Structures are given as C-alpha cells and as structure tokens.
Length: 482
Image 1 (cartoon, rainbow, N blue to C red):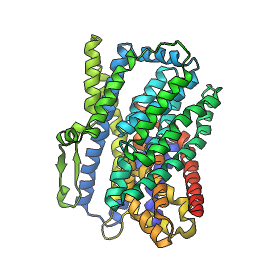
Image 2: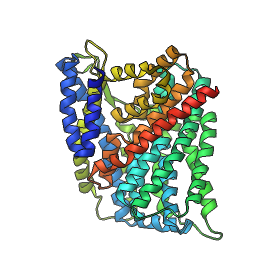
Image 3: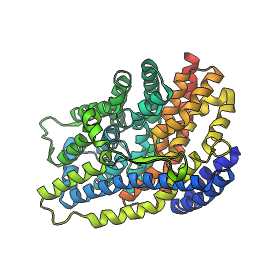
Image 4: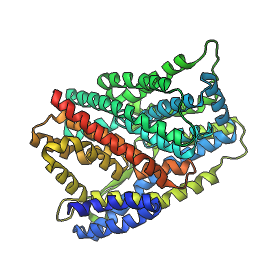
C-alpha cells in the first residue's frame, strides 16, 4: 500500500521528465483516480474532490490572469524597459542586477502576498533584462523555496502549525528561528546550483563575492526577524536587503530613477494592506463557501476579494489610463490563462485525490507519512522530505504543514527527539517543495511564455533533493548539539 501511495508521485515526476508535464498530469490523474477507488472511497467523494479541485484551480488562474494583465500593460506602455534602465543606474553588471531582483523582489512579494505571486512577477522582469526564460523561472522558484518558509506574513507557520497543533508562542518562535537558520544555510549551498544554471545559459557569474554579500544582506536580518517578528520576517528582511544592496552597489552621485517602479510599489501596498489592517481583511474576507459537497464531509471555498487578482487589475488599469494605452491586453492574458488550466486542473485533482482518498483505511498521504515514521534513527534525515512531498502534492507550504505537521509531531514524540527541531525541518521542507511543485512551475512558466514545463522541473529537482538532505543533516547536527 505504501508503494501504491507513492505511485502518483512517481508517475508525475518520471513522465514529466521523460515526456511532458501535460501528459504526466493526465496519466497521473487516471492512475490516481483508479487508486482512489481501490482505496475504498465512494463516487460521491470523488465528485466532491473534483469540486474542490475546480475551486483551487480558479484561485490560481485568477493570479495568473492578473499578473499577465499588469505585465502586458507595463510592457506595452514602456515601463518595463524603463525599469531595466533604472537598474543599470545601480550597477553596470547584469548578473548583479539579476541577483538583486531574483533575491530581493522574490522575497518581498512572497512575504507580502504568497499565492505564487513572485513567480508571476519576477521572472518577467528578469526576462526583460535579457535573461533566459527557463533560468529566470527556475531560479525564482528555487529562491522562493527559502522565502516560502514564512510565506505571506507568517501564514505557513502560524496557520499551518501553531493553530492546528496548538503550539505555545515560545515554541513557535523557536521553530521559526531554527527553520530560518537551516533554510539560509541550505539556500546558501543552492547558490552554487544557480551559478551553474547561469553558466550553462552562457552568462557566467563573474562577481560571486558581491553576490554572496547581497545574499548576506538578506540572510542575517532574516534570522533575526524570524525570532523577533516571525510573521513579518520575510518582508522586513527583503526590504533590508534591497536598501543595503542599493547603498552598497550605487556609485556616489548616482540618481536613481524610481518612477517606473511606482506600479509595483502600489501593488505591494495593496497586497500588504489587508494583512496589516485586520478590519479591512474582515471586510474583504467574504467567502463563497461550498459545504459538504455531494453529501460528503468535504468542503471548500473561495475568497475572491482577498485574491491578488484585484490589486493586479486595479494597478494595471491605473497604469493603462495614466499612460493613455490604447488597449488593456485582455485577450492575450485570457488566452494564456486558458492554456494553463489544461495542465493545472489535473495536477490539482491528483493532489486532492491523494489527500481525500481515505475511505475504509488511511489516505495515501497518511500511508506515506506513517511509513516515513518507521525509519527510527534515520527519521530526522528524511523528515524534510515529508514537507517537500506535501508542497509538491498540494502546491502550498501552509497545506503541507497542515497535512504532515501532526504526524511529524507525533513521530518526534514517539522517537523522543526534540519536536521543535522536527517541526522546523517540516517547515523548511515545505518551503523547498515550492521549487518543484507542478502548480508553481506551470503557472510561472506559462506567464513567462515557456511551453516546455518539464525543463523547469529537470533543473530544480536535483537542487531540491540535495537541499532536503542538507536540511536533514543540519537537523541531525542540531539535535546532537541540543
């Protein structure tokens, strides 16, 4: 049963690499559907899972459409080109500008909005600088594996762990600190993979020392903020990095051109405002809820007003009107969004079938979690992979924590090891899983007009696996020191 539970994941990875992500998703859906009924789940539950998948797909497509709309407007009005020119004023080296955006902006938009927003924005800006679309998407997703640890204002830790597990505040702070430290060390090692990506794309990194300085501008504040203000750690560290980097890189007397960045500043403000102002979040938090679909206990919902879609549309509309654009570029955005849905829906359906496959026995994900718990002494080394697996399946750091954190906590207690460290490894792994999650790959690659999705998975799979083992080794060392 354990091997059967792993079969959908094996099909997705192998056929994505050998054939295409679209074929892998369709074949994986057929295989998982068969296993779903073999697990003893009824037809009504299958229909309920289909309903949940439709809602989840719509939620992601809203972000894809909004991001495409805003970028098309900014590109059509010349603002993207002006952004590239403004970056040249900071530093003449194209590679330094690449890392400034790939690190700083990815962290900032992940900390502000989550929802895969960095993958919808940053690769397009990197491509506008002349960088390869494949490398741009792969690197942003790989970097986001660190920033997604805390996601949007700490949601993966607070909503994914603290609330369901009823963890005390002091333990939450410790989990956040250890996750940040382990995540930073792991991401530092992954920089060598990024250097190789760029070298293979005929753009070797000649200023590696400065890149390490830029990374330290984020890493050090990130660990500090993870202890003091966990929910805002990513946003504050990103702002610290951007400010310090500009001061470090800019030549004396250089005047920065900030005008082209105003739309993205406005977008960030609109995305962050509901999270900082609780009253506004309650007003916008209206949910279209579907209870007990088809008579099952499965429910789902959609909060359209809290989606990044509306800030994207508002900012894009303002830019189009202010720049007197002759078109809103809606047709092109709609066409790409429709193409994304063809791959996105079956991928999400597979994830939901695995989660809700429990009929007369534990679900597929519970089987996987239970078998991992039998590793005894080797469990610590492999515990990050439950987090990676959860994010790969569900497309969400938070949901990965909701699904696997309880079993991680239970296993830690059974093995009598420090549960705080194990939960930190779960959090790190869940963040890393975003780099290979098919939902993120399909959405980001489609926005970047990259049709060969499997190449992104091919690039990021090995770094993600290496990162998982490094995180496990660091966790084992931490347990030994404690």
